[in-house]
Length: 190
Length: 227
Image 1 (cartoon, rainbow over the protein chains, first blue to last red):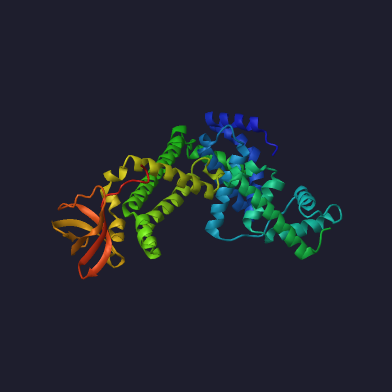
Image 2: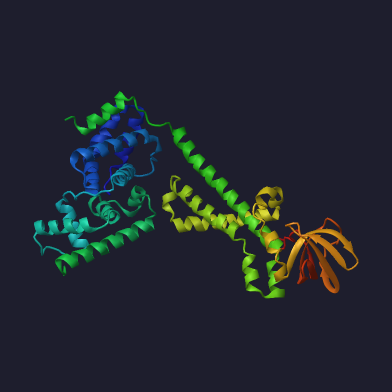
């Protein structure tokens, strides 16, 4: 994950001294978190914004719990993960997935299903979204965190609160299932 | 509509929210570790009770003489073992909620808890800690139950009186037995055969309330597992 770690830590130090400095953190992460929450929950913009608002308030209240030796963005995402999961548990429903950007499509296509340049990107994107929607939430989330947010195993472990070895297993199974579902619906990718 | 970042800043200012102080966050973490530590000590005590029960039952000695698998199985302190297993699972969840608890898999935590409980249990046994916890130890009267199977040749209780080759014994349920002692009866080291002494007897049920003793042992454990 390309994380401006030093900058984040400085922002946290300032936010602990004066509330107004926290705005810089919110501005930096609000759009990323909004996309993340929408992707893993499938919520519409206003509902996702409400969750993101809760995430930032909770993060602010627990700012002293953040260890400066860790990645701030992974810590923030772990709160986002918990909030979204608790929302999902309360509502017990999963709405349609939101859009994926081209970068994720290319990433998934080349690394998981070896699609390369053979497919029209628009069709490929549609197929990938359909297949992703069929995966269970835990597999979708690790794929999102790894391919879209570009977190490494250790950071994903901090976010979803699972051991690194479990993250590896989840990711391997997610890729396997994604590939199987893709082949099942759209034939071989070779 | 107000941008999200402004909304958040407004809420923080309006509600005068402040980050929780470091001491409060540390205190929660410390309390979790204290609960975990106390749970581990309790688990160690339970293991010490298991060791105590196993010592007192002397099931292996009974097995060598009787070769009765049902009798051997009935000696397993299953309730105490289940208590340790349940506590290990609870401690796993407690550990998971510590700051870095999620980094270790559940099975590893349970393994570590059980290993630590075993070590603590052995240490507590060496110091005979169960002697200070009679109420807890006697919650389940496992050795009493095991040594109250006259049909299978096991009897125990308190000596009421002794007269030549017969002693009178009251078992744990209050039944009075007449025990025949023969020249073939082995009386183990610490047994004095005096009134009020608690003993366990291996032998045969002769007729109602009459028991022929082959082997008389002291009731209290010999602690040979730890000594």
